[in-house]
Image (cartoon, rainbow, N blue to C red):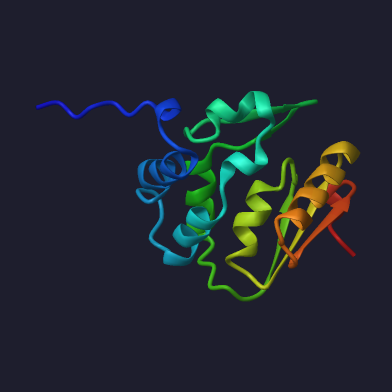
Length: 148
């Protein structure tokens, strides 16, 4: 018997988020800390309203002005290779919506994220604060210059 294809739009947000992690993230990571972070941070909170239908699929979501939210499975693989253990400081270049900073904040003591687009930096900083992420610091500037 063929397995029924899941239609994301027929699921509750909680079901869609769980399906997203089970389908795209759990197959890519060995580190339980990273898997737990993806389970705790809802990608739907970080996508613009028009991108919400794509929030729970393994796709890039455009944010405008050349920025986007990266493909989740790719970021999960990169974080897994980093061997994160909940300690230390991380530097992210390209804050975008703040989604991956939120993920990384669950896997480290502190995250510094740099965004060149003032509108994205401001909205990400506001959203991360609203969602209670206290160990993330959003910096406006050129990521190639790093953070002082």
